[in-house]
Amino acid sequence: MSYFFRIIKSGLLWSYARNTWQYDVLCVLILAFIFLTPKSWFENSELRFGQGHQSPFAQRSVLIGSENLSATPDRNEIERRVRDLTGRQDTQVSGLRPVQDVQGKIIAYEVDIR
Image 1 (spheres, one colour):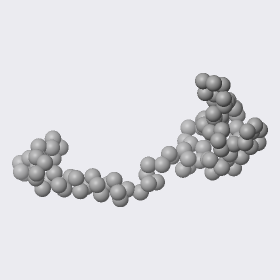
Image 2 (cartoon, helix red, strand yellow):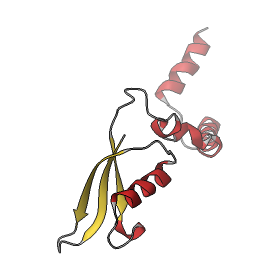
Image 3 (cartoon, helix red, strand yellow):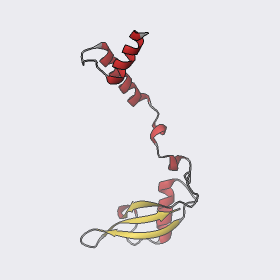
Image 4 (tube, helix red, strand yellow):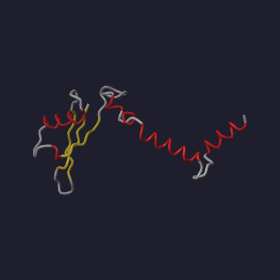
């Protein structure tokens, strides 16, 4: 029984050197986790499940680059672009703010969505 606890203790505290088989097994397990884990495990849960779990009226912001829009975009064009980005047709734009560079040129729009 003490042999079992010694193995657990050395595994948790990692007392193995780099040139041991235990170290090689750990490296293989880490690489297997990295390459075999489904991408969906790491996606944003709010985008996966729709509105999110806190409130159906939760508000978020999206930054849309001006290069993706016409020279003088109207609200409808920005709403269409936000719906394309989020993949949801029920997205509502509740606020819109231009983001400018130091010369005053509009480089993006910060859009509040629900």
